[in-house]
Image (cartoon, rainbow, N blue to C red; front, side, top):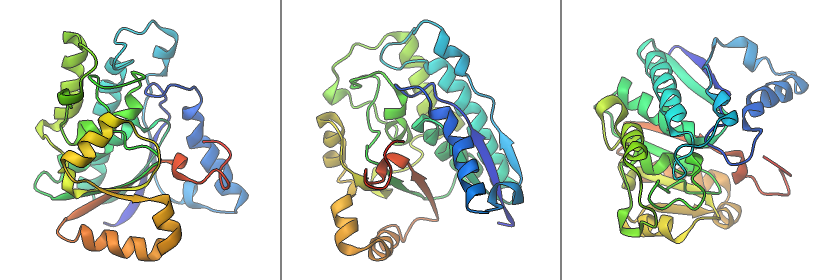
Length: 253
């Protein structure tokens, strides 16, 4: 890779609480306070959002605004894929976490033969689906989409055909599914997930490293262990959600 490319995704249609789209600018302003030139040193691409949907009625209660999220997936996956193909290293800054599935899709679209590992640093597993979701918010679903999982074993909703169509689009974008194998995912700092998500973690024996383990073993030792665990992966995607930070560090996300 020759250089970093920033991909800015000020989208918040996958979240339940408003304001996530402001996060991209907030981190850039914070960088200025630390006299960092990171955000002016590298080329940047801003992805068009579908935040106008926040003012429209919700059509899919079990995957809210999923049509708009499908459009975001298309744009983000293409931007990530094109960046990699043009020898850039993509750093994606986004609002809500639903877009992480699009980043993973873009990596696989650029490198379809790669064995992709995912390090998911997050308070939540994001393994819900339209069939299991307690909220309908798609920011709780990107990892399930990436491993091509409906989790119908734990279904609590009858999903309408339109929602199922768009959900299948998210899972199969780039005509590759799954994008990552469950055994090649490492969760770090999980602290809040439902029994439906636990079912998938146990079904696939997915690796979980708790915040307590990170504190006890130290970040450096955890990193070494994770790199060893994913040693047979050709590429590794790291997703960092700010809600993984302890509340003593961050008072709000």
